[in-house]
Length: 315
Image (cartoon, rainbow, N blue to C red; front, side, top):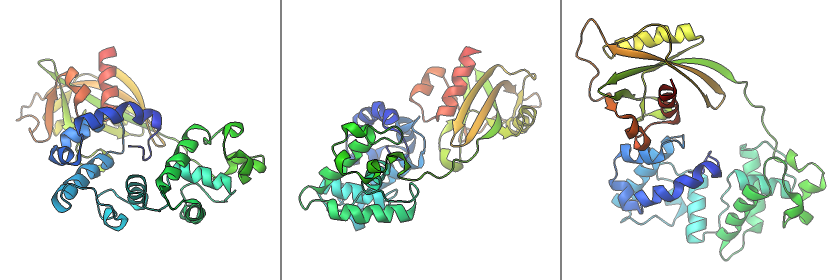
């Protein structure tokens, strides 16, 4: 959960997820919809799908026991070099450097290692330094400590150097500019995007369609379309809902919202939709579903869907 997601976002979600899936077996037996629903709002949903796939392989091929060998772990879905090293080190005591953003930041500052955050060159240099620091016994304790240090004290901006137990030995602090380490790549310029969404209602329920592409694969969303302008987005949405045997009602939006995804800034307008006047069988059951608003709380929907639903309630 913490991969590319902040601790503050993960903290309230971790315990409920474990309550719902307390072991590898329960996760392997769950449907993808159930896992995505429990993950809803955390983003990067490929992580949830891979977690479930890994659980299925662990049950099938490893007698429901998480492997100890980092080389075996590397072959599980979603387990890259960091995940395999972290599990082997933190859970099984393997003497391996597990480098995520916090560990990278602390070690790069401690030794004033040049390089951009997340770059292969910096990760390699940090791994070499860590190899000399990791103790023979319980090496995972040091990794966990470095993670906590980066989360609480050696923060990306305004690090609390005076409270740092490593402050006296920190080469980055000695330069007077610890925030220079690691270097930061220029952020991409934000891109403004207009998104139009359709709200079709039936017996108090809202129509959602299942996404079958991109990082939101398998999640439920309002029928929507994007363009460079609000007019273009509505025009594209009209074509989109026609494929579902729906049509837009009027030209005035009934709700507005905003959403940010990486460098994309979405300006959202929501339009009412109804059954097409030219008839048709309506949306196919395998690609669309009618939800009560209260059901969205525990459904496999992304944050964008929740924001659109909230805009409808406000409107």
